Image (cartoon, rainbow, N blue to C red; front, side):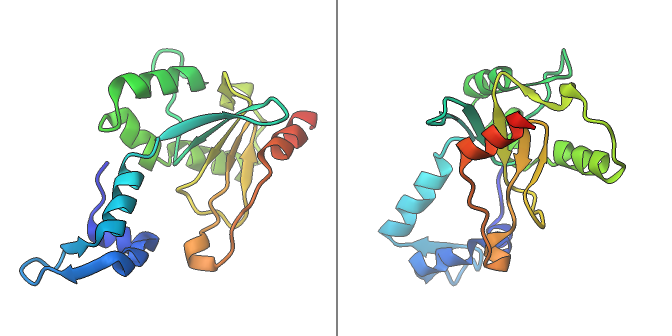
Length: 175
C-alpha cells in the first residue's frame, strides 16, 4: 500500500512542500520536512483506514478510503467482518491495501448504473446503515444501495462535496 513521492504529488500532495526545510541534492525524491510537516505525515500514516460513527439520528455510518472487500466465503459485503479482519491483520495487510486502493466495487456499480441494472440487496454492505468512500473521483456523488462514493476531486476542481451524513442516510432509507 505504499505510494511514491511522485504519485503523492500528482494526486494533490504538492502542499507538502510548504513544510519542507530543504531538498536532498543527492536524492531528488527526498525532501526534509520541518517538525510540523513530520507531525502531519505521522498523523496521516497513523489515521484509521476505516471508521464507524453513530449519527445524532442513531444511524451507523462507515467511512473507508476506496473499497469494502467482499467476504471470500459468502461473497457478501459485511462491515463487521471487514473491520474486525482489518483490526486483526493491520494496516500493512493485503486487506488494508485493498481498502485503500481498490476500485473493483465502484467500477461494478458504475456498470450496473450505466446498463440500468436492477438493484440487488446483496450489493449492500451488511451490518451498517451506510458506507461512504473516496478515492475514485466522480462528477457528482454516486449512491447505490447503502454505499456512496463522494470524492468529487476537490484538489482538482476547487469544488467539494459536504454531506450531512444523518440526513443523507435518512433520505435514502425513506426511498
